Length: 258
Image (tube, rainbow, N blue to C red; front, side):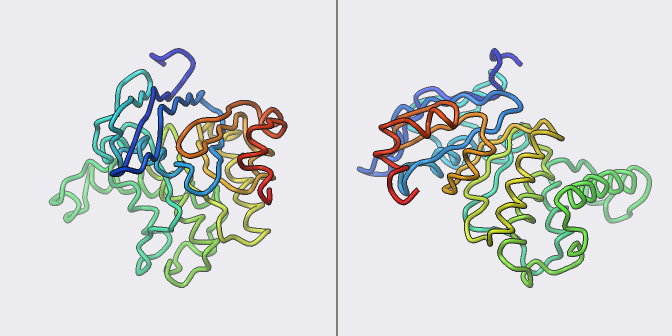
């Protein structure tokens, strides 16, 4: 992969906003095919870290490497093209469009047909459209949302919107999927479904996943590795059972209503 066994790694990621230190020398390594969970109290810097990985933020110091290539200063659309897809805490979908069209929108960086070809819809343009729609339908089948594929997103319950948000990120065909609190606001049944889909992404698609999540039951069940942040610093990293028994982590996070 050009960088040892790690698909992605960071070196000393440091980010501040004015006088507020969001991240301090954060080093994380993601092994291809693993599910890694990033946990910590609110304000620990978890979403800021995902933003640095996906090109939405540029750290003042440190580097992000994908397959050994430095992507730290690339714009977010270039990072997406290189294979990093993500969801956000707040669902950001086109509520006036159908589920199918929202997922199709995630294919935009994979589309090569120009405006004229798309308008005329013949030959290569038609063949490309068929290929893209096949990918979309495969994702719809995988996430078991076929009954709502023609529904307007704005009319869906929040838990279902979270599934559509993940589906759109998958439409990018990412090498790495970044999930920012994918279970927040979901019912118990929806949480179980989403956890199963995340696990299946690894088992069936060999997807590398980095997930920010507060539900420790899910984190401990699905993760190959857990990384813990506190006040922007990495305080622990290891197997789920190691993290569960780490005294520093218990004091900083797990002991607080978890």
